[in-house]
Image 1 (spheres, each protein chain N blue to C red):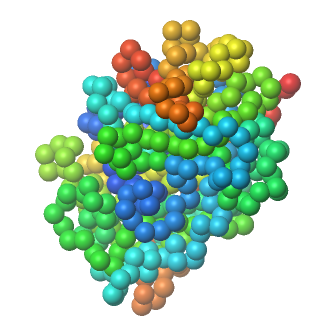
Image 2 (image 1 turned 180 degrees about the horizontal axis):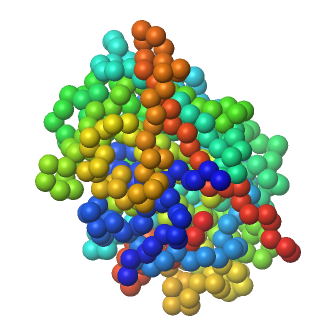
Image 3 (image 1 turned 60 degrees about the vertical axis):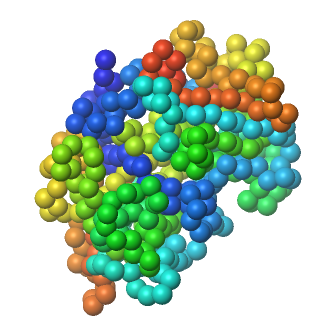
Length: 231
Length: 198
């Protein structure tokens, strides 16, 4: 039997028939709800010393001998919790295809050019008001094997560590007006009334004139955790 | 109330972004398979395992994240015995490994054995799993086969149906000289691993 998300959840179900890879990889049993499972208010915080400013500029951090090819963009946003409070100090990691729709990873067999000056990976930490920002190249569409003539919409992958164990999130950001969105089973796995939450907004105010367009992607993490249980 | 940003799959190509050093890319990672620097006190252990899909095939593109308390049962950033006494990088209790980094899809972590976090719970390691085909990550716990008495009292294990508890207990494998525990994760089938709501 399929495991269902509770009513009102914005998350996709584990099993989603149109996304073929879920068939053998989705758990078949519902996750157990055990209050003692959660480690209180804390969670992993793997950040700190490893970060450098260049990490947030994907137009520079993969350069060898020139500029990466493609349309320069900024991706900025604010991270809040479900109470609307900003989440400072969240580690945000992103990765994506290049302008031609090719990932740097060796296992990507898509026959589109690699860009020697673009890696497609970055990271930063949200500031005191929960804001984060990257400069990157707009990723191209990516063909995959899910069904005949399947193409992923342009997207940027994101991984976030919030303050608590329950705030961990891995997701994907999409671009407004992409004609592939209604055709994409991964995007469509999200309940219809929550899909807009994954689509960035064009943000004229954040553009860098003559340099880069800007898209805004605000993020809401699970939390704060419920008030501590009575002893 | 703002609505949570929906989860999406990690996809197959996270390696160069999240664990670049394991996949042949330059750059420092924020976590890897070696979780404890030499000066961190505690029993050295190794945790090895594989992820299996519903056909029993090893998953070659999963990301495993571990998170655990230190020897005294304290988490990084809370009241652990290590707080303020070691360089910040010495022990965060966090590690992550992509299964595509090894030819046979095995994950290997080197760490220390955690203590009980509250005196009631048996020593355990949090395990979070991401992969293509998994639209939202799953969370579970790994317990230790040589903590039998503590496991019997553990409130989380006791909440798991008896017939499924073994899916959470890593087996110490004495074929290896260094304390090695084997923990396989099964997504489906008779041995489907128990996952927990977060």
